[in-house]
Image (cartoon, rainbow, N blue to C red):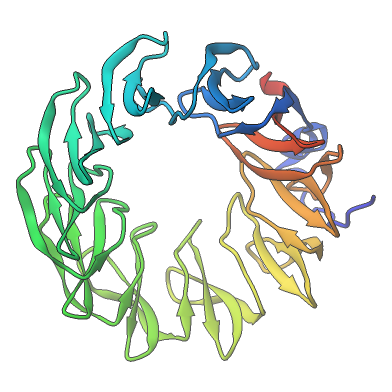
Length: 368
């Protein structure tokens, strides 16, 4: 199969990079033999064989045997596992650090993990002490020292001591990004910082998270962008707006998508029915029912030929032609050519793939 790509016009500037890309290939790093598998976190993956979960490293070595009916990923050195009918926590040597006693047990973040006892959420520390008593209908992982919690259908924020920074009165919220989170109060959106202070008063019809210092907000049915202070940097004139990525953002005008820069200049005119974020210098675009990739000048770098296409990660992207998954590099060259049943993006330099009904991993040849 020959994939089409544009030749570079300036080989001198990125000559070595292009040579490296031509050489870049993916290979199987963990043989496909698992019934289920997950991405690597802290260089460890949960895998399942015969309905039992164990843990492997990036070379496929079993570091914890297949003995658990259910398991969650390692976070801050600990993983929750099902022992009997309750969850507890083990370390990477498979030593039980926190005895099984919870109906559900989440990942550690900021030194605390959410757990469920009698249908309510609380938080424990790494010694298993209940530092925030179970009293919430829902709870979310701590970010920047705050956790969103639900009480009687409303959301608030608590700190690491369980004290309310914002009382449960919010209608919804977005996760923290760049130290700020969008919140909804009385049908309007504003922003709070990591101390729970309201930095931008609720005034917008809708809002997105901050990315590269700007957040898309909706005013009178049009989208623009504000900075951390709530100042309108890009006036609301677009029908839709996506997050900034690599100093470019996709926006919609009259049913077509193009790209603007931070100065609100239209760098790529609205002409596409679908676009994606710029990642590693390339963005997905749809042309005549097929997906390809453009560079930041708007030139097609990899011709539209894919039924599905995904963002680049570690210089590779997964694509689909007819019923076949492939991985390509940023020149559009095929980097992995074996038959794949299913495939995922590279994450921490490894990609989860299914071959002949079993899960394994592929990775960059130079890294393994």
